[in-house]
Length: 158
Image 1 (tube, rainbow, N blue to C red):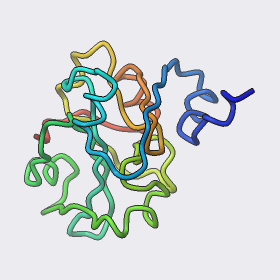
Image 2: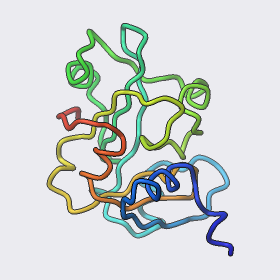
Image 3: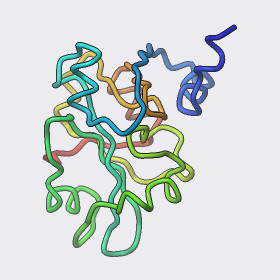
């Protein structure tokens, strides 16, 4: 019975679309960066991805999923989504825009379907880990499944 309560919106969307995934939980009282999360769960850093939200010069929002140890290259990111420039969405606006809080943001099930880009290095992975939709929750799934459910594309953005 306790398992049902663990379901996040992202997990319900994966279930509804019959996309296989596994999840892991960890203790989390406040925001923890992705590298610390990977270390807590003993996951290889190259398999754990973070979800970043940006604003384009046009005012549109874009989602980027990149390895936790990498930085988003804003020039490459802008080019990937056809914008003149993009900048990081201020953390204070994250929940209002996506419905998720910092540390629990995932490309699956945001308030609106924003254009999403997964760093192309993910293509060669068998699976990767992304936030499960709340702090303390990680989802393991195939990159192709994430790409499909998030209506994403692959591009070099780091």
